[in-house]
Image (cartoon, rainbow, N blue to C red; front, side, top):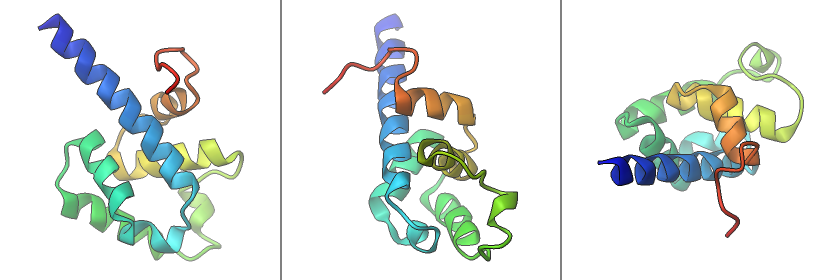
Length: 109
């Protein structure tokens, strides 16, 4: 059981890093159409695809002037981690740590 738990935790950290990286290359207008990004968010959250897609559609339609209420301005990694957090309901700090490998838990590929 311990090995399975470690393996699952590693997979989640890798998906988190991939999702934040994928979010960095997207514009808000096309997040709901990017199937690879949505799949990563589904894997991370355990939510249904339509739930994640609905959240993505909501944020993709927010006017640019109001977007600052949902996403902070700053580095691309911080903003991307926040976007993934909005879609998956996962903690921003954990997503950011996975994306930057701040804790050194991911091995370089």
